[in-house]
Length: 105
Image (cartoon, rainbow, N blue to C red; front, side, top):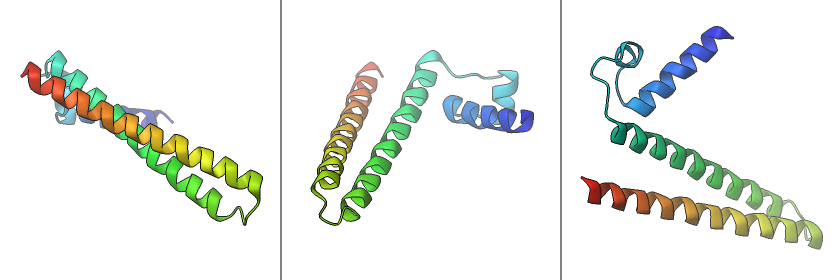
């Protein structure tokens, strides 16, 4: 369990700090705060996008297997609507963050 936690921590450190594992472990040539925040928000937006696409696929499967049952169809349509709204919000926030980052450079 400890090895799993350590390997996940190193991978997340590499993603967030965009450096090699040795730089993450020894803090040599560590990135600035803006780069860390940018990488962290990028990671979170990717996770949200993946969750939105997964929810969209699951809702589509729910709609497909409802077999005309009106209650299940309505639930699937509601999930589809909310997953599309979530994807639009995730993409919109990605665009806004990129625009702000471009203005700050």
